[in-house]
Image 1 (cartoon, rainbow over the protein chains, first blue to last red):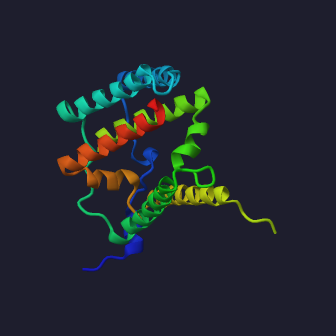
Image 2: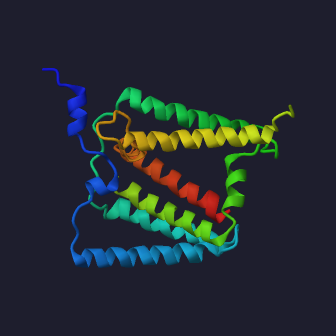
Image 3: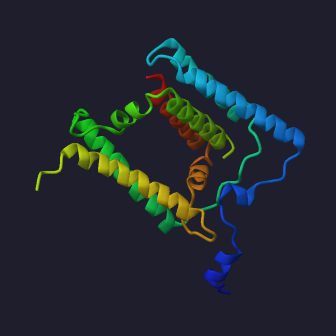
Length: 150
Length: 69
């Protein structure tokens, strides 16, 4: 039996975090705040390391090893992945990603000269301020955790 | 009219691609959207173990590329 797509969409909740947030106990909340504070401190310290230094390498090796071990050994409760993806909806993503990587590849082919910089060339100066780099590292750490939960 | 510098065109191209992805993510989070969110299609890719390993390796590479180099 065919269903009305508009009605189905009205009954389908959104996907923003506050629409799917679960109630937490005070102990869980306190632990969450503590972990977040630890991540902020880690990101701040890691952002202070010099590029190409051993400290900078260790700064990304530790989270990688930790999350790899968690994902492999003791994975948390995972968010169930969809059984299938909508072809049309996914194709929009594919077009954007293909355009982005084609643009990046053409910059790379041209040796990233100033008149055709690569994405990295553009991002690196933006990451120079300590605060911005700390925030970016924090986002990277949280993204890693989000991936482990997937 | 002065010519548009190639550098500006390159930056505009990247900005356009990134902005399009942000718009897609916002659209994907609307109720009943057919567009998958980043988390959903990454989750789909990570269903097989090899997909999980590759996506996590990609995440780590991004960190190394932007923060350790």
